[in-house]
Image (cartoon, rainbow, N blue to C red; front, side, top):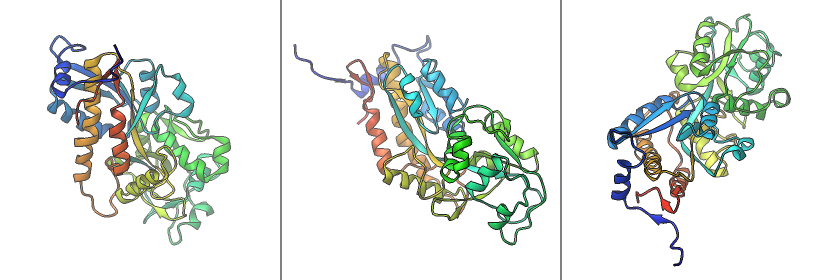
Length: 355
């Protein structure tokens, strides 16, 4: 008999499968994920809403950092990993099979600081931030900082850089942004989920970084915008690729997403918009042996790019307000991500049953 090609299951059959193979004794499917901390607050809300819409599926997510999430996915300890920078090129060959790297939303890391005596806004060029972390700039009244902040009285206070001790997407986004602006950073530190910042005081996880920044006057560090807002941290304006100073506003993050979409490379540094903006991704196997589990996973991904994305578009923020939640994806990126989910298979069965 001729090969009929991939077989498509109906929506009714897919939903029936969710209650059959791969379920617990109570008829539930538990999907496990781990990884990025930047989107974790939004993921908690989304996963609860998805479980309310699809009661037989529960999603358990551990915000351990992008690096840890990818390690658990590689070890097949979770059903999906979450990473703020996708899969680094050097790690792609370490997975057992093909992976889909699906953008879910736009996110951003900001440069936060603790200077109680400072009045007014602070501008920090990325090259200056690199010099602070490299130990070249040691006092907040350094001429390089003063040059970009005319009229601002800078305190004579030691600079204390704060970094992450564990591997995470915020470090990858931060290090990528500095590497584009500083040859010294590219040579001494480089880019990655975990890099060595020899002059930094390190904290574990984004919450640890935010907590340390809050209690350490003179500190400067990088953390996702939502955590900076939650911790009442002050955030610096940073230079974009054209030399203009921008804050991590919703508008600047959306502009960065549109720029990446036009460039056709979601893993690159934005040439326009906020330079520490990036899509945040879910990483899933293209082939899932268990049909029921695979159908549940495909349904979750579709929901995130449909109802989840719509919830982001319904939100309104005041002009110039910090992007303290995830921002929606450009339409062309969203359409491609939805199409990519249809590549998920269990043997010859197409897992996504929703048209």
